[in-house]
Image (spheres, rainbow, N blue to C red):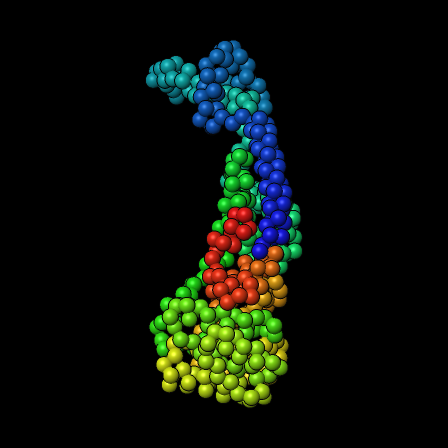
Length: 427
């Protein structure tokens, strides 16, 4: 079981791991190159001002005057009609007096110095290299755009690497919904996350194992414990033609006998030729009571009689066989719904063939929508090399797998175990 899927999965995982490893190596080289090519940080504005002051101190006075003259030459003076200069100066001198001349003598230097600072500072700042600072509003959209572009490139590379693994899963009848889940889990674990190259294989294996284990994360059913809660405990078996319902019913009758319980079998398949005789042979071998009617009888009436017999005779479990039918046959599906209404089973089990892969998943989905199944038993699991149905049907329907049929003997009914499936897959 799962042998073919194991080999395919192993090869695909090796190629997937190699692809992710190469991608990680490329990204590491890219980061090193970017760090080397990264420009030095520009000095802040405060440091620029300090540099300007230092330059001012080192500039000789003569050069300062020359620079002042140059700056003043550059600045155009406003055009005015000047009054006669001698007359203005004489009037100023007359009005200034002693205190005016004293003020002019002692404060003229400070005033000129303060006036000189402005052009000097402007000139020095103009000569000094000024960093180009971008506003935050222009930086944020650029950073976001670069981040989105990198994310898209990373996702594209991941999709290309995952393609090989996706094909391997599809070839082994794994449902599309399951593949999408595995893909999403691996993407979350690998894309946009820093992983040491030595731990890539370990991370992928761990993520895949956890992802597949989560597929069976549904509430399990302990059939024996549930059967002991009520007397009689009624179980109805549904599925398509040839799925193995009759054999599975015989196996469960044997199972309950081994636990010290008294089962009764109901032959409600009055449609298929030799269905009653086949079930009767199993009942005789196991020494189990069989409730039957003639062919063509109402299946719901047979189911009703079987439940009444179990109540009168204090039987523990009622196992109702139904005719195989396709979900597309409306009349037979309506008939099955009638059996469910009349017999009121405590448990509705879908019986499917593991080897049918995605067909089994689709059938279980349709029967669940029609009558609301409670669980599943997969037959012919011993000859199922692909295993796609076993790891898909529970996740898609949200119902647990109770048992796996692994042979034709009555004891060939193994309880479903997630660890068993992961072990067969080599995870």
